[in-house]
Length: 95
Image (cartoon, rainbow, N blue to C red; front, side, top):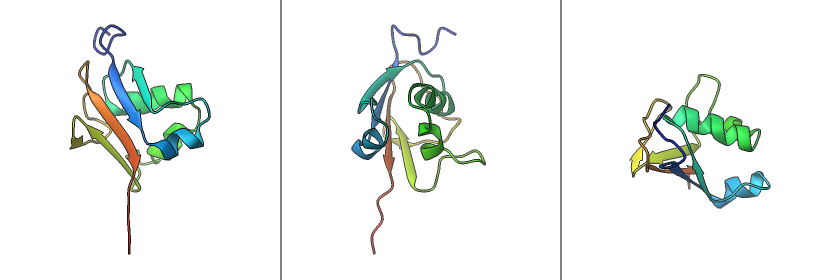
């Protein structure tokens, strides 16, 4: 339980498009979470429905979403040591 405590939280940065979809959310969120999956659960606790935007029913991160932990692409099991910075944003595609 001591990991990711309020004294040394993880920092989650949400893309503006996510913030626009969930009134009251912010681009920078501090929270306690040990894995990306726990982080998504906490985002959903704060802003119901956010988990469905990020995670599918397999469960896995949705194809059109990107989650990076300290600059590396992450999956749901990726560990989040205290002080970790996580970026959540939609994939960009073109044609």
